[in-house]
Length: 573
Image (cartoon, rainbow, N blue to C red):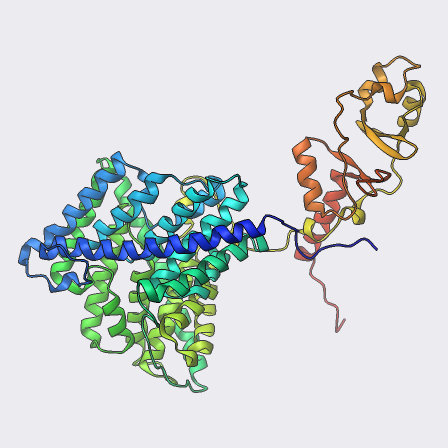
């Protein structure tokens, strides 16, 4: 029996793995620099001092002048986007997806430099964003640049780009497993050893280095207690509420974007308008400015009274939506964490079966997973941030329900809507390609019409008259010599042999092997621009044993279509 592999043998995997480890180091370094840059900009804008010590903008003493700080930062970033690179606009993840799917994973040195710089300025001047979106774009850009120094394919470069993006996320949040799941659910669009292993190695490298460069332990350590049986029903309610909030936020963001697009101003000035709203919001609720990790921790631990939390979250939502919709540079994860945690804290007064901390945590994950369209990432991310193992079951239920609400209510997620508006649709579902489930020997015709190399053209024309194929394999004692076009037979002199009619290029004939997957065969046929190819027993023997045509490949797809569409009642007839 012919040996068939579970996975594609890729001898380049060791090289990709070594590069991934280097990328993990680069991603960690980039995350450290980004955090320091945010702290430096915060100190410069709000406290007029040179320092990289982390500080909250809410403690400034500028008075009414603090309302102007976000405007100044936004103006700077608008100029950087206009005269540097407009790729720095937005929250980073859609741009990374677009580069992966439609740009052959090529990113420029400009983006690698300007994205963290612009994000540091925006967040440091009070922008209500997190550092995760910028580090995903920055880490991906650095990895792409490194990959461009080596002779790699676009698919291999994609694996390395995603490895860099997720290594940066690991370094920021200390959640390597969640970063790997983010790659699988949102960035890779495949699950192969070639793509999975580099991402895992890069994230593991960043995870080991993070305590040396940034911090150790969970970002928000949180005891939640063991949930009771009634918590299951409460989780269903929390999931519904989280899914609805996620849908509202997604729709509101793109309504805001539409509003900016209708303005009679160049997009360079839009961030400044967003900065005005951020500045005014900061005057009302100073803690709504900046990343807000301290606010997230207070919401999770129920350290904010409900009325104050409601005011803070309303301001945060408004300034985040307006600032992001204006096209400035910033992330979405930290604001979503805050808004989700706030929802859970407010609902905790009505949800039985668990502590307030539990409901803040599960709603935080539910909103995040629903907005991103990545429930597994959200579950593991919430666990990684808090270390709350008792919350895993409630997290699973809440995130699943919220994700289901998103799938039913929304055509696209916040990650793909921007790409779709550029005319590039992204299909988010995974499935085994039906052509991967079949091999050439399963689909090929085992009685192909072949032409003996010694036969004259007239005789071969008679043999080929029984069908309408355009090409025929020519053999010598069963060994493949090449493919002969029907037109060459029709135009040839009667006594010319098939061997003489073959192109004298000296190139090896094109063929398929029986153990090849149908997908690989389809790729080879597409590359050659032919509708059928001969199948040979082995590279050494080259004995023709069959023929594979496009019509044979269609049969494999038809079987899959039937499995998806034909409803059967097998029992109880």
